[in-house]
Amino acid sequence: MGSQLVELVFDFPHPERLDVFLAEALPEHSRSRLQGLIKEGRVTVNGQPAKKTGMKLEKGMRIAVSIPPTKETDLVPEAIPLDILFENDDVIVVNKAAGMVVHPSAGHESGTLVHAALAHAPEMEGIGGELRPGIVHRLDKDTSGIILLAKNDAAMRWLQAQFKDRKVKKFYLALVDGAPPTPKGRIEAPIGRDPSHRKKMAIVSEAKGRNAISIYKTIESFEKHTLLEVNILTGRTHQIRLHCAFIGAPIAGDTLYGHRKQRVKVPRQFLHAARLTITLPNETEPRTFEAPLPDELDDVLNKLRGKK
Image (tube, rainbow, N blue to C red):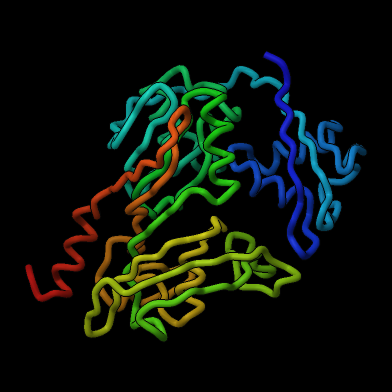
């Protein structure tokens, strides 16, 4: 199989590093691998080879990435049980458990969703990336819920296009400390890397971040907490967690962006990818997939309701 050519257009109003843009546009590849492709001369900007991984992109620039065929990897499939909501020849829809990392990374060389998926569907090996086969979007380790995986190259490209064109509708359930300023609303606040903490994201100026939009509505109110449904129109890293903290209602149990001391006893951050609507490869009508709230989070709500 020959190299895959991916063509992109940078259409954001503010400049951004080439490697940062590619890492978000092509989430199935690690940033370090994309930086390697840039250094190998496999990335062009407006037809010219990119000379630096950190070159600044301006609006309207055209980027082409030549991705070489996947090499053999040492990923070892692991027979980890998966809660599969749907599967056909093109995709697997998984209800990911909290605590499971999506793909291998430093400190998480085994036990990931990728390892489990390879054991379930060995044909996925090499689809989209050496260490992230089949991955088209991500969930945080401690966020549960729906995630899609591609089983072949054609499905991978189709799903990537659906996400890139914002044709995928993603709804999350989030229990927050306190209450948002209004029962429902729209949050538009750019997100970028926290300059003082490499593992955190932050709300930044428009010139330093990427546009991020979340729409929320109240599902249930409690004395000191609120259950929200959040629809994200963009897919930035830690978007819901940051946006909720930004409006003064951080996710319950989120020790990174919320309160260090729990306001209600929760086993982990109360964030669950509950519903997703997408048109699958070779289909014309969108499908909606739903993942029920995990028992450990349902128990939290029942305690807030005064039930045992």
